[in-house]
Length: 153
Length: 154
Image (cartoon, rainbow over all chains, first blue to last red):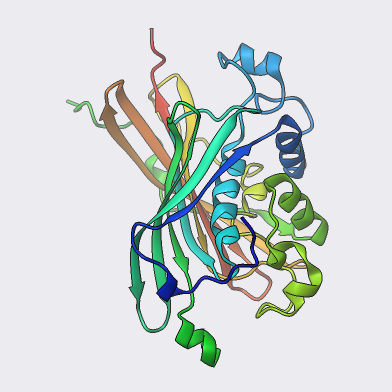
């Protein structure tokens, strides 16, 4: 999926998919992410297998903050016209490193309110057993073709 | 007499705002965040193309403020329930662009504590809301984080 696409409100129907995309969140990616937290230098359940096992987990897990960042990327990569207004997620299951995951959105509502046009979407991350590990809802702002033509929105 | 949904915790914390620090946003932070999250949107990664956009330069991705929330120290709510705590959910309201050079003043408050009963029994949820205000006094991001407490399965 590229961000060179420009999708407008008129191009979208309720029920349309965003994605799906198959991804793998690697241990290196998690390490890079955890490093940005600044003061987290010691190994944690996010980066270290022994610590994760000690906490009763089968392996290191992906931090929730990275999961939500990946769902945000799904939406902003879908179209370069999109702006996320709200993204609200529930962590239902652990997301582990280096496994194949599917990220997807489904448009559930579309409203042109005049001032702005909004789409509501269900978003999720699921594993290969089709278990939805992270689920959520997003509200995104998307321009109409008319407003884009006159540069109003 | 107490009913089973009553939750014992420090109710005086509800709604009280705590200053959580001042954070400086740098291009390097945004770049590292984008690399880790696999972001490729030019608004967040490409100086030139972002410069031609309505924002006039690179902005931070919508969930960028999460890199600050993990380090926030919050008062103990003294919830008397459960022996395990999980991160249950997170909601991000994106209200305005965050740019390199911004200085974000962060405050956090306990928004809600409530109980629910599911298949596995009672759970107690704790919701904290953190606001990020830029140097112009504009709230740019609101982050609500929920944790859930439950009893370990025996």
